[in-house]
Length: 200
Image (cartoon, rainbow, N blue to C red; front, side, top):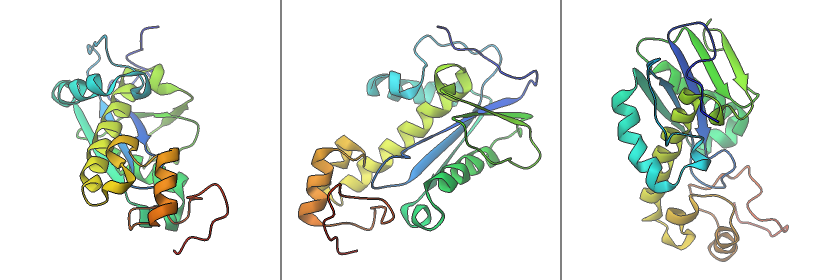
């Protein structure tokens, strides 16, 4: 099914999405994108449906062809303070605030959002597989977050973040059990499935 260019009747509509919500380490990262109404791309889809190679190819193309984009990380200490849902929404608000021109309408992947300023919005379940601008935001959020995780992997290679990107894989959890937690781990998350005592 082809992705749709627009949801609302407004010309300047942005899509927004986040990446890393379910991770045990690293930030939650959101992007917001305004695409021209004429934008077309056969590869672009929900970032989970696009290979890493194609996401990396899409990133500069989207940045060049979009009208505007913004990307925002919210880091683990703030996630632990305000919770992951609020952190995800704050990241989306931060990404939207970088857009120039400001959007007239916002479409959001998922079903949870808080109004941003007085701009009307709609939440769309699986919106990253339905609308081009949300798909574009999902790809940018994922590529920027992945690049950050690959960078901090150099500091703590034993967790293999370059591969698992901080998600709760068996390997990641085994490394937490063996080496404990780092400053990049989200202390408010259940880092191990069994009730091991972690020295936080």
